[in-house]
Image 1 (cartoon, rainbow, N blue to C red):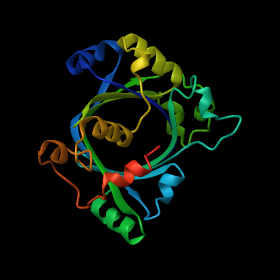
Image 2: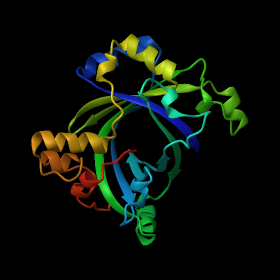
Image 3: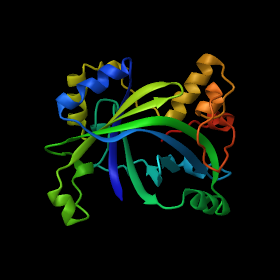
Image 4: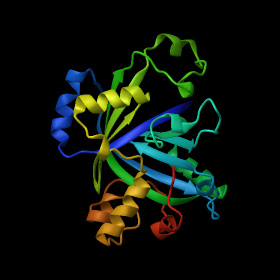
Amino acid sequence: MQSAEVELKFPIDDLARLQSLLPALGFMLDTPRSFEQNTLYDTAGRTLRASKQILRLRQYGSLWTVTHKRQPCPSASNDPAQYGAAGRYKVRIETETQIDDGPALAEIFEQMGYAPVFRYEKFRTEWSQITSTIDGPLFSATPESTEALTTPPRSHLVIDETPIGDYAELEGPPVWIDETLAKLGVDLATCITESYGRLFLAWKQRTGSAAENLTFEEIFGVTRARNSSGSRHSSELANNPLTC
């Protein structure tokens, strides 16, 4: 399935307080806290990174998904700059589907010339809320099925507990994102659009850590379930930071 993804992150100072606020605001718990591991793939020449795309294989609990992300094609009708001053929101076109056998797809990627370049892990909790309206050119496409016409649209808040800190991510229409931030008492100045790859590199610069991937094992020496594929060094990532 392909969809427009408009999102904004913010760091969490008090995880228990944030989660206690959500039910009263109409959020429903979609997925309890589950371990998630992600592997990004690219060619030896980093062609995906150069074109600001990502190819990701994710295991979330027992579920495997493959995802491709790219920036929207610039046009008068879907210019990402319209979604907030100076591009305050992160806007991507996401194509994602579930798969049965993650390791098999990882092998296919490698045989096609796409090798692992970065791994990151987190514990994720997923919440959602019914959104009364979804406005904006990125949301105006004709639904792909009749089910989309009858199912109330939902916006999402996910909580990510990463080895370098806790973050919440809001995904939905810009107006809904702003309203939700206000209800949660989140200072807009703390909101960010950086990927976990960029956040990891910034953390490495601050701490001098030798970790090469954003995993619990590399940062804390704690072993977690891992997929079968490895990763190249994040020094390669630092030379050409991820922009997706």
